[in-house]
Length: 394
Image (cartoon, rainbow, N blue to C red):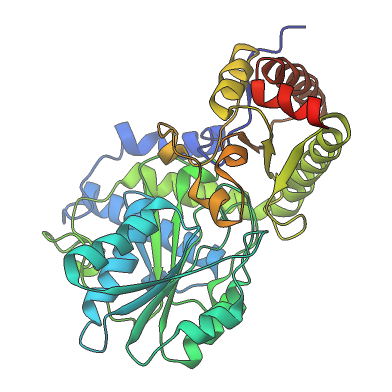
């Protein structure tokens, strides 16, 4: 049977759903007015943007004036972190994050440390990738102004106790940001229930277009503007708005929230089937991340005595598109900072495989994936002198 391409890297990006594409199409060719223009074509675009803003706010439990559009999740993270830290530096220059954040967050904190003289505390995680709330309590100081902890990890899928962590920061009067790029569209997220001050999202992670994201900013949060120029986004983020992208993001988010329970159930079944079959059929393999507190479609395995890059290339030859971790570091030969942070050795971390399921994946594809993995892992291990030595000694 010709299986074509089996796409299993939905944490990296998703396709644009047909309904989303149809919602966007007229705003490329027919309703193309600049939202800042005062004539009817411009007002039409402005009205559409505000309707999209209201739709996104409704899904997140926010007020429309608390939603700001960006060009990506990375931009939203950078704006939240740099904008808040710099606006509040008179109060203090101590900020807190974790060792397993996405590079969009880690690099923003690195900028603050190197270029602006901030002191950064990096919270550790346990072997499942979870932050201990007590560690956050101990880390907060009188001069702490910002805490940024991701909702769900992009590599191992671990979901953090964000409400508890955000409440700790609020009690201390510290601004709390969460990178929710992986969580939005996969689990229910309500900013009021979470009690967060800032939240980032990106449309292409939930079947929307690339090149558009958003930042939730709780009313009253002090932040510097990120891009200077015109008066767009209430003078806080200059630049002509991506009208089709914003409309597509709103349409995709509504679809995601309307179908969240069925989507979660589907992904959960696929993940459970995959995990059980791999653990049953392939020896010397380790499931990374928390077994229960994880995104429903995210599975990360480390295969001992196997090089992750070789594994990915051989899967690709069989029509299976997967990942070793973050798409933003796929060109790096270094082992994942997330896997090292949860205690894996360099050798084992190098043999990691991330599978992230989507709505079109099937149980038949899971079975084909396991059959193919078993064959490839066996072949690669036969070429490994380390494995040969291990078998002799054990």
